[in-house]
Amino acid sequence: MQKQLYIVAICILGNLSLMAQQDLGIHFMEGVWQSTFTNPANVPAHKFVISLPGFYNQARIDNFTYNDVVRTNDQGQTIIDIDNVISEMEAENIIRNQADIPTLALGLQINNIFLQAGHRLHFNAYLDYPKELAQVLWQGNAQFVGQVVDIGPDVLTQAYHSFYVGASGEIAPGVWLGGRFKVLNGIADLSTSNRDLRFLTDEEYYQTTLEANYSLNGTGSLNYDGFNSNSSLDLESGNFNFDQLFADNYGLAVDLGVKMQYDRLTLSFSALDLGSITWRDEASNLSLNGRFDYEGLDVLSDAVLEETSTIELRDSLEAAFSVEETNVTYSTALPAKFYISGAYSLSERMQMGGLIYVERFREKTVSTFGLSLNSRLSRLLSLGGIYSYTEQDPIRIGANAALTLGPIQLMAATDNLLTAFRLEDSNTANFRVGLNLVFGRKKEGDINKISNQNDFFR
Image 1 (cartoon, rainbow, N blue to C red):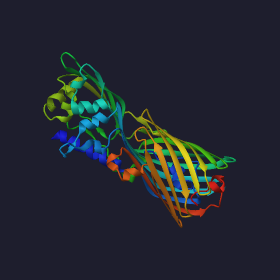
Image 2: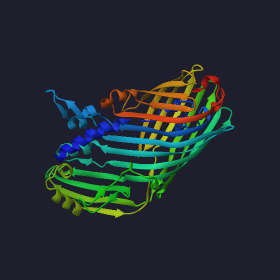
Image 3: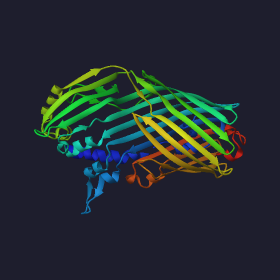
Image 4: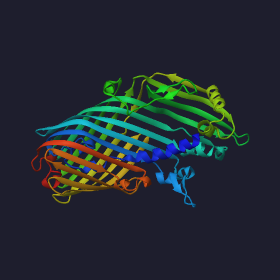
Protein backbone atom coordinates (compact mmCIF):
# COMPACT_ATOMS: atom_id res chain seq x y z
CA MET A 1 0.00 0.00 0.00
CA GLN A 2 2.77 2.42 0.88
CA LYS A 3 4.51 1.73 -2.42
CA GLN A 4 1.36 2.57 -4.35
CA LEU A 5 1.02 5.87 -2.49
CA TYR A 6 4.53 6.85 -3.57
CA ILE A 7 3.68 6.06 -7.20
CA VAL A 8 0.46 8.08 -7.13
CA ALA A 9 2.31 11.01 -5.55
CA ILE A 10 4.88 10.96 -8.35
CA CYS A 11 2.17 11.00 -10.99
CA ILE A 12 0.27 13.86 -9.38
CA LEU A 13 3.44 15.91 -8.93
CA GLY A 14 4.48 15.32 -12.52
CA ASN A 15 1.12 16.54 -13.79
CA LEU A 16 0.55 19.50 -11.47
CA SER A 17 4.10 20.87 -11.60
CA LEU A 18 3.63 21.80 -15.23
CA MET A 19 1.28 24.64 -14.39
CA ALA A 20 3.56 26.93 -16.19
CA GLN A 21 11.37 27.68 -18.74
CA GLN A 22 13.16 30.62 -19.16
CA ASP A 23 11.63 34.07 -19.45
CA LEU A 24 12.41 34.68 -23.13
CA GLY A 25 9.37 36.26 -24.76
CA ILE A 26 9.32 39.41 -22.63
CA HIS A 27 12.91 40.21 -23.63
CA PHE A 28 11.72 41.56 -26.99
CA MET A 29 8.60 43.35 -25.74
CA GLU A 30 10.09 46.82 -26.28
CA GLY A 31 8.48 49.54 -24.22
CA VAL A 32 6.70 47.20 -21.77
CA TRP A 33 7.76 47.41 -18.11
CA GLN A 34 8.26 43.64 -17.80
CA SER A 35 11.02 43.73 -20.47
CA THR A 36 13.24 45.42 -17.86
CA PHE A 37 13.23 42.12 -15.93
CA THR A 38 15.56 40.59 -18.53
CA ASN A 39 17.71 43.70 -19.11
CA PRO A 40 17.78 46.72 -16.77
CA ALA A 41 18.98 48.85 -19.70
CA ASN A 42 15.52 48.54 -21.27
CA VAL A 43 13.08 51.37 -20.55
CA PRO A 44 9.27 51.52 -20.84
CA ALA A 45 7.42 53.57 -23.41
CA HIS A 46 5.98 55.87 -20.72
CA LYS A 47 7.61 58.37 -18.38
CA PHE A 48 5.80 57.14 -15.27
CA VAL A 49 4.85 53.52 -14.59
CA ILE A 50 3.18 51.82 -11.64
CA SER A 51 3.55 48.06 -11.93
CA LEU A 52 0.86 46.20 -10.00
CA PRO A 53 1.00 42.56 -8.81
CA GLY A 54 1.70 39.98 -11.51
CA PHE A 55 2.72 36.35 -11.68
CA TYR A 56 5.32 34.14 -13.38
CA ASN A 57 5.83 30.40 -13.12
CA GLN A 58 8.12 27.99 -14.93
CA ALA A 59 8.60 24.24 -14.63
CA ARG A 60 11.00 21.68 -16.03
CA ILE A 61 10.95 17.90 -15.71
CA ASP A 62 13.80 16.16 -17.52
CA ASN A 63 13.38 13.18 -19.82
CA PHE A 64 9.81 12.08 -19.13
CA THR A 65 6.26 13.41 -19.23
CA TYR A 66 2.98 12.49 -17.61
CA ASN A 67 2.10 10.24 -20.55
CA ASP A 68 5.30 8.29 -19.93
CA VAL A 69 4.05 7.54 -16.42
CA VAL A 70 0.40 6.79 -17.16
CA ARG A 71 0.05 4.54 -20.20
CA THR A 72 -2.43 2.22 -21.90
CA ASN A 73 -1.32 -1.42 -22.22
CA ASP A 74 -2.16 -3.92 -24.96
CA GLN A 75 -5.37 -4.86 -23.15
CA GLY A 76 -6.58 -1.26 -23.18
CA GLN A 77 -6.03 -0.79 -19.45
CA THR A 78 -4.60 2.39 -17.98
CA ILE A 79 -1.49 1.54 -15.97
CA ILE A 80 1.27 3.33 -14.08
CA ASP A 81 4.50 2.33 -15.84
CA ILE A 82 7.43 3.29 -13.63
CA ASP A 83 9.78 0.98 -15.54
CA ASN A 84 9.06 2.97 -18.71
CA VAL A 85 9.78 6.22 -16.87
CA ILE A 86 13.14 4.89 -15.69
CA SER A 87 14.01 3.78 -19.22
CA GLU A 88 13.52 7.40 -20.38
CA MET A 89 15.86 8.84 -17.75
CA GLU A 90 19.47 9.90 -18.33
CA ALA A 91 22.42 9.69 -15.92
CA GLU A 92 21.35 12.97 -14.22
CA ASN A 93 17.76 14.23 -14.12
CA ILE A 94 16.36 17.55 -12.95
CA ILE A 95 12.96 18.61 -11.70
CA ARG A 96 12.67 22.38 -11.40
CA ASN A 97 9.95 24.85 -10.51
CA GLN A 98 10.22 28.62 -10.07
CA ALA A 99 7.66 31.27 -9.25
CA ASP A 100 8.12 35.05 -9.37
CA ILE A 101 5.52 37.42 -7.96
CA PRO A 102 6.22 41.10 -8.70
CA THR A 103 4.12 42.87 -6.08
CA LEU A 104 4.61 46.61 -6.60
CA ALA A 105 7.12 48.74 -8.52
CA LEU A 106 7.52 52.34 -9.65
CA GLY A 107 9.36 53.70 -12.67
CA LEU A 108 10.05 57.35 -13.42
CA GLN A 109 11.95 59.04 -16.25
CA ILE A 110 13.82 62.25 -15.37
CA ASN A 111 15.52 63.76 -18.41
CA ASN A 112 17.58 60.90 -19.89
CA ILE A 113 17.64 58.78 -16.73
CA PHE A 114 15.01 56.16 -15.96
CA LEU A 115 14.69 55.29 -12.26
CA GLN A 116 12.96 52.23 -10.81
CA ALA A 117 12.23 50.67 -7.44
CA GLY A 118 10.13 47.72 -6.37
CA HIS A 119 9.63 44.41 -4.64
CA ARG A 120 9.37 40.83 -5.90
CA LEU A 121 8.70 37.54 -4.15
CA HIS A 122 10.52 34.41 -5.36
CA PHE A 123 10.02 30.67 -4.85
CA ASN A 124 12.58 28.17 -6.12
CA ALA A 125 12.49 24.35 -6.01
CA TYR A 126 15.20 22.15 -7.49
CA LEU A 127 15.89 18.41 -7.49
CA ASP A 128 18.83 16.82 -9.34
CA TYR A 129 18.86 13.04 -8.93
CA PRO A 130 20.83 10.19 -10.55
CA LYS A 131 19.00 7.62 -12.62
CA GLU A 132 20.45 4.93 -10.35
CA LEU A 133 18.49 6.32 -7.40
CA ALA A 134 15.18 5.69 -9.19
CA GLN A 135 16.39 2.27 -10.35
CA VAL A 136 17.35 1.16 -6.85
CA LEU A 137 14.16 2.47 -5.22
CA TRP A 138 11.88 0.79 -7.73
CA GLN A 139 13.81 -2.16 -9.16
CA GLY A 140 16.21 -2.99 -6.32
CA ASN A 141 19.98 -3.09 -6.45
CA ALA A 142 20.51 -6.69 -7.63
CA GLN A 143 21.22 -5.26 -11.09
CA PHE A 144 24.22 -3.38 -9.68
CA VAL A 145 26.11 -6.30 -8.17
CA GLY A 146 29.83 -5.53 -8.21
CA GLN A 147 29.29 -1.86 -9.10
CA VAL A 148 29.74 1.34 -7.13
CA VAL A 149 26.56 3.36 -7.60
CA ASP A 150 26.07 7.05 -6.82
CA ILE A 151 22.54 7.76 -5.56
CA GLY A 152 22.88 11.13 -3.77
CA PRO A 153 20.26 13.72 -4.84
CA ASP A 154 20.89 17.47 -4.86
CA VAL A 155 17.93 19.28 -3.28
CA LEU A 156 17.00 22.93 -2.89
CA THR A 157 13.70 24.56 -2.02
CA GLN A 158 13.47 28.14 -0.79
CA ALA A 159 11.51 31.37 -0.74
CA TYR A 160 12.85 34.92 -0.52
CA HIS A 161 12.04 38.58 -1.07
CA SER A 162 13.98 41.04 -3.21
CA PHE A 163 13.78 44.81 -2.71
CA TYR A 164 15.46 46.72 -5.53
CA VAL A 165 16.40 50.12 -6.85
CA GLY A 166 17.82 50.74 -10.29
CA ALA A 167 18.57 53.20 -13.03
CA SER A 168 19.37 53.24 -16.72
CA GLY A 169 20.74 56.01 -18.87
CA GLU A 170 22.52 56.87 -22.10
CA ILE A 171 26.27 56.94 -21.42
CA ALA A 172 27.24 57.50 -25.07
CA PRO A 173 25.32 58.09 -28.30
CA GLY A 174 23.28 54.95 -28.87
CA VAL A 175 24.65 53.17 -25.78
CA TRP A 176 22.47 52.67 -22.73
CA LEU A 177 23.68 51.20 -19.45
CA GLY A 178 21.39 49.90 -16.72
CA GLY A 179 21.70 48.32 -13.31
CA ARG A 180 19.67 47.17 -10.32
CA PHE A 181 20.86 46.77 -6.75
CA LYS A 182 18.85 44.24 -4.74
CA VAL A 183 18.57 43.54 -1.04
CA LEU A 184 17.45 39.96 -0.47
CA ASN A 185 15.58 38.66 2.55
CA GLY A 186 15.13 34.92 2.96
CA ILE A 187 11.88 33.38 4.20
CA ALA A 188 12.80 29.68 4.27
CA ASP A 189 15.36 27.32 2.82
CA LEU A 190 16.16 23.62 2.66
CA SER A 191 19.22 22.65 0.59
CA THR A 192 22.05 20.15 0.29
CA SER A 193 25.71 21.11 0.38
CA ASN A 194 27.31 17.64 0.04
CA ARG A 195 25.58 14.92 -1.94
CA ASP A 196 28.01 11.99 -1.75
CA LEU A 197 25.85 8.89 -1.17
CA ARG A 198 26.89 5.63 -2.81
CA PHE A 199 26.84 1.90 -2.34
CA LEU A 200 28.52 -1.30 -3.53
CA THR A 201 26.89 -4.75 -3.63
CA ASP A 202 29.43 -7.55 -3.11
CA GLU A 203 29.57 -10.07 -5.96
CA GLU A 204 30.14 -13.08 -3.69
CA TYR A 205 28.09 -12.47 -0.55
CA TYR A 206 25.59 -9.89 -1.88
CA GLN A 207 26.35 -7.67 1.07
CA THR A 208 25.53 -4.03 0.39
CA THR A 209 27.92 -1.37 1.65
CA LEU A 210 26.39 2.09 1.86
CA GLU A 211 28.78 5.04 2.29
CA ALA A 212 27.62 8.57 3.02
CA ASN A 213 29.02 12.09 3.13
CA TYR A 214 25.74 13.93 2.79
CA SER A 215 24.87 17.36 4.22
CA LEU A 216 21.51 19.07 4.47
CA ASN A 217 20.96 22.66 5.57
CA GLY A 218 17.72 24.37 6.58
CA THR A 219 16.28 27.39 8.34
CA GLY A 220 13.82 26.38 11.03
CA SER A 221 12.81 23.36 8.99
CA LEU A 222 15.02 20.56 10.34
CA ASN A 223 14.19 18.70 13.54
CA TYR A 224 16.46 15.69 13.96
CA ASP A 225 15.82 13.15 16.69
CA GLY A 226 17.55 10.07 15.39
CA PHE A 227 16.17 7.72 12.73
CA ASN A 228 12.65 7.77 14.13
CA SER A 229 9.29 9.41 13.71
CA ASN A 230 10.17 12.40 15.88
CA SER A 231 12.47 13.75 13.18
CA SER A 232 10.82 16.09 10.71
CA LEU A 233 11.29 18.38 7.76
CA ASP A 234 8.92 21.34 7.88
CA LEU A 235 9.29 23.78 5.01
CA GLU A 236 6.18 25.75 4.18
CA SER A 237 7.57 28.34 1.79
CA GLY A 238 4.17 29.38 0.60
CA ASN A 239 2.76 30.04 4.06
CA PHE A 240 4.42 33.28 5.10
CA ASN A 241 3.26 36.57 6.53
CA PHE A 242 4.62 40.08 6.60
CA ASP A 243 6.31 39.44 9.96
CA GLN A 244 8.85 37.49 7.90
CA LEU A 245 9.76 40.43 5.67
CA PHE A 246 12.75 41.20 7.85
CA ALA A 247 13.93 37.78 9.00
CA ASP A 248 17.62 37.50 9.82
CA ASN A 249 18.47 36.00 6.40
CA TYR A 250 20.01 38.66 4.19
CA GLY A 251 21.85 38.81 0.91
CA LEU A 252 22.77 41.15 -1.91
CA ALA A 253 22.54 40.81 -5.68
CA VAL A 254 22.91 42.96 -8.78
CA ASP A 255 21.50 43.00 -12.31
CA LEU A 256 23.59 44.62 -15.05
CA GLY A 257 22.70 45.37 -18.65
CA VAL A 258 23.85 47.25 -21.73
CA LYS A 259 22.04 48.10 -24.93
CA MET A 260 23.68 49.40 -28.13
CA GLN A 261 21.83 50.70 -31.15
CA TYR A 262 22.98 51.58 -34.62
CA ASP A 263 20.38 52.47 -37.20
CA ARG A 264 18.04 49.44 -37.40
CA LEU A 265 20.29 47.09 -35.40
CA THR A 266 20.08 46.64 -31.62
CA LEU A 267 22.52 44.56 -29.55
CA SER A 268 22.13 43.88 -25.85
CA PHE A 269 23.71 41.93 -23.02
CA SER A 270 22.57 41.42 -19.45
CA ALA A 271 23.70 39.50 -16.36
CA LEU A 272 21.03 38.95 -13.72
CA ASP A 273 20.86 37.71 -10.13
CA LEU A 274 24.57 37.91 -9.39
CA GLY A 275 24.47 37.33 -5.66
CA SER A 276 23.58 35.05 -2.76
CA ILE A 277 21.63 34.81 0.50
CA THR A 278 23.17 34.02 3.88
CA TRP A 279 20.81 32.01 6.08
CA ARG A 280 21.08 32.76 9.81
CA ASP A 281 17.59 32.57 11.30
CA GLU A 282 17.33 29.22 13.15
CA ALA A 283 19.89 27.71 10.78
CA SER A 284 20.34 23.94 11.13
CA ASN A 285 22.87 21.64 9.49
CA LEU A 286 22.72 17.87 9.36
CA SER A 287 25.73 15.87 8.15
CA LEU A 288 25.40 12.15 7.50
CA ASN A 289 28.74 10.35 7.55
CA GLY A 290 29.57 6.70 7.88
CA ARG A 291 29.53 3.23 6.39
CA PHE A 292 26.67 0.77 6.67
CA ASP A 293 26.76 -2.94 5.75
CA TYR A 294 23.41 -4.61 5.03
CA GLU A 295 22.92 -8.35 4.57
CA GLY A 296 20.67 -8.53 1.55
CA LEU A 297 20.16 -6.90 -1.79
CA ASP A 298 17.33 -4.41 -1.70
CA VAL A 299 18.54 -2.15 1.10
CA LEU A 300 17.05 1.11 -0.20
CA SER A 301 13.74 -0.26 -1.37
CA ASP A 302 13.42 -1.96 2.04
CA ALA A 303 14.19 1.31 3.79
CA VAL A 304 11.91 3.53 1.74
CA LEU A 305 9.10 1.49 0.23
CA GLU A 306 8.58 -1.48 2.54
CA GLU A 307 6.95 -1.51 5.94
CA THR A 308 8.52 -4.77 7.13
CA SER A 309 11.64 -4.80 9.30
CA THR A 310 11.57 -0.98 9.49
CA ILE A 311 12.52 -0.87 13.17
CA GLU A 312 15.41 -3.29 12.70
CA LEU A 313 16.75 -1.38 9.70
CA ARG A 314 16.34 1.97 11.47
CA ASP A 315 18.32 0.76 14.48
CA SER A 316 21.06 -0.56 12.21
CA LEU A 317 21.30 2.72 10.31
CA GLU A 318 21.53 4.75 13.49
CA ALA A 319 24.29 2.51 14.83
CA ALA A 320 26.29 2.62 11.59
CA PHE A 321 26.05 6.29 10.65
CA SER A 322 27.28 9.34 12.49
CA VAL A 323 24.74 12.17 12.15
CA GLU A 324 26.17 15.52 13.21
CA GLU A 325 23.78 18.36 13.93
CA THR A 326 25.08 21.95 14.06
CA ASN A 327 23.67 25.47 13.86
CA VAL A 328 26.05 27.26 11.50
CA THR A 329 25.06 29.98 9.04
CA TYR A 330 25.38 29.08 5.37
CA SER A 331 24.87 30.69 1.97
CA THR A 332 23.09 29.74 -1.24
CA ALA A 333 23.73 31.39 -4.60
CA LEU A 334 20.92 32.67 -6.81
CA PRO A 335 20.46 31.21 -10.30
CA ALA A 336 22.74 33.47 -12.39
CA LYS A 337 21.15 34.36 -15.74
CA PHE A 338 22.73 35.80 -18.89
CA TYR A 339 21.01 37.18 -22.01
CA ILE A 340 22.85 37.94 -25.27
CA SER A 341 20.56 39.23 -28.03
CA GLY A 342 20.32 41.10 -31.29
CA ALA A 343 17.30 42.61 -33.04
CA TYR A 344 16.72 44.14 -36.46
CA SER A 345 13.82 46.39 -37.45
CA LEU A 346 12.26 45.16 -40.66
CA SER A 347 9.89 48.13 -40.77
CA GLU A 348 8.38 50.74 -38.51
CA ARG A 349 5.98 48.11 -37.15
CA MET A 350 7.93 44.86 -37.24
CA GLN A 351 11.11 43.63 -35.57
CA MET A 352 12.92 40.28 -35.66
CA GLY A 353 15.49 39.14 -33.12
CA GLY A 354 17.59 36.32 -31.79
CA LEU A 355 19.00 35.52 -28.37
CA ILE A 356 21.17 33.16 -26.37
CA TYR A 357 20.12 32.52 -22.78
CA VAL A 358 22.45 30.85 -20.26
CA GLU A 359 21.61 29.98 -16.66
CA ARG A 360 24.14 28.75 -14.09
CA PHE A 361 22.74 27.14 -10.96
CA ARG A 362 23.82 24.37 -8.56
CA GLU A 363 26.92 23.68 -10.70
CA LYS A 364 24.72 23.06 -13.74
CA THR A 365 24.54 25.18 -16.90
CA VAL A 366 21.45 25.37 -19.10
CA SER A 367 21.47 27.08 -22.51
CA THR A 368 18.57 28.14 -24.72
CA PHE A 369 18.52 29.66 -28.20
CA GLY A 370 15.60 31.72 -29.48
CA LEU A 371 14.29 33.55 -32.57
CA SER A 372 11.52 36.14 -32.27
CA LEU A 373 9.21 38.26 -34.38
CA ASN A 374 7.29 41.17 -32.85
CA SER A 375 4.79 43.52 -34.46
CA ARG A 376 2.94 46.66 -33.36
CA LEU A 377 -0.54 46.25 -34.82
CA SER A 378 -1.86 49.55 -33.46
CA ARG A 379 -1.30 52.05 -30.68
CA LEU A 380 -3.29 49.72 -28.44
CA LEU A 381 -2.13 46.22 -29.33
CA SER A 382 1.21 44.53 -29.94
CA LEU A 383 1.81 40.86 -30.62
CA GLY A 384 4.91 38.68 -30.79
CA GLY A 385 6.05 35.12 -31.27
CA ILE A 386 9.22 33.26 -30.34
CA TYR A 387 10.79 29.92 -31.25
CA SER A 388 13.27 28.48 -28.76
CA TYR A 389 15.47 25.40 -28.64
CA THR A 390 16.85 23.35 -25.75
CA GLU A 391 18.20 19.80 -25.64
CA GLN A 392 15.25 18.70 -23.52
CA ASP A 393 12.66 20.46 -25.67
CA PRO A 394 13.93 21.24 -29.20
CA ILE A 395 10.68 22.68 -30.53
CA ARG A 396 8.98 25.36 -28.45
CA ILE A 397 6.72 28.04 -29.86
CA GLY A 398 5.82 30.97 -27.61
CA ALA A 399 3.67 34.05 -27.88
CA ASN A 400 3.31 37.41 -26.15
CA ALA A 401 0.90 40.31 -26.24
CA ALA A 402 0.53 43.78 -24.75
CA LEU A 403 -2.75 45.71 -24.68
CA THR A 404 -2.88 49.37 -23.59
CA LEU A 405 -6.26 50.93 -22.85
CA GLY A 406 -5.76 54.45 -21.55
CA PRO A 407 -3.58 54.20 -18.44
CA ILE A 408 -4.10 50.44 -18.11
CA GLN A 409 -1.60 48.12 -19.73
CA LEU A 410 -2.04 44.34 -19.71
CA MET A 411 0.62 41.89 -20.83
CA ALA A 412 0.94 38.13 -21.12
CA ALA A 413 3.72 35.90 -22.39
CA THR A 414 4.63 32.23 -22.62
CA ASP A 415 7.61 30.48 -24.18
CA ASN A 416 5.73 27.23 -24.79
CA LEU A 417 2.26 27.87 -26.10
CA LEU A 418 1.70 24.24 -27.09
CA THR A 419 1.77 23.21 -23.44
CA ALA A 420 -1.69 24.70 -23.01
CA PHE A 421 -3.02 22.16 -25.52
CA ARG A 422 -0.69 19.19 -24.82
CA LEU A 423 0.09 19.43 -21.12
CA GLU A 424 0.48 15.68 -20.63
CA ASP A 425 3.14 15.46 -23.40
CA SER A 426 5.21 18.42 -22.17
CA ASN A 427 8.17 18.53 -19.82
CA THR A 428 8.82 22.29 -19.87
CA ALA A 429 6.39 25.17 -19.65
CA ASN A 430 6.04 28.76 -18.41
CA PHE A 431 3.83 31.83 -18.43
CA ARG A 432 3.86 35.43 -17.21
CA VAL A 433 1.03 37.90 -16.72
CA GLY A 434 1.34 41.53 -15.67
CA LEU A 435 -0.68 44.68 -15.07
CA ASN A 436 0.73 48.22 -15.30
CA LEU A 437 -0.58 51.75 -14.92
CA VAL A 438 1.21 53.95 -17.45
CA PHE A 439 1.29 57.73 -17.79
CA GLY A 440 3.05 60.21 -20.04
CA ARG A 441 3.52 58.48 -23.37
CA LYS A 442 6.87 59.43 -24.81
CA LYS A 443 7.28 61.17 -28.12
CA GLU A 444 8.41 59.34 -31.19
CA GLY A 445 12.04 58.26 -30.88
CA ASP A 446 12.31 58.82 -27.13
CA ILE A 447 12.53 55.18 -26.07
CA ASN A 448 16.25 54.55 -25.65
CA LYS A 449 16.81 57.30 -28.24
CA ILE A 450 15.97 54.90 -31.01
CA SER A 451 14.79 55.68 -34.49
CA ASN A 452 11.12 55.51 -35.41
CA GLN A 453 11.32 52.08 -37.00
CA ASN A 454 12.34 50.62 -33.62
CA ASP A 455 9.64 52.44 -31.69
CA PHE A 456 7.52 49.57 -30.44
CA PHE A 457 4.39 49.45 -28.25
CA ARG A 458 3.40 53.09 -28.43
